Length: 86
Image (cartoon, rainbow, N blue to C red):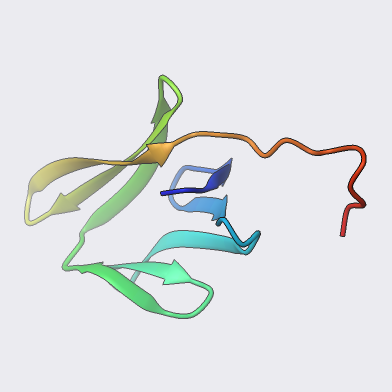
């Protein structure tokens, strides 16, 4: 994903390439992207996100099995002092 990292843990919050803040969350046993309600994966028992070596990973537990997925590179947004902050 071409994103800028904001926060991880039980959910993953990031800025997309259009500077829109988005989150991946667990909602009623579904992986959902907000704002909106885009269902990415169903039948999830547990979900968490973590960082390792500048990469963001997602851990999913489904039917007593654990899975781990690479989400993307953890990059922080650089603030250009010449551009006004909106």
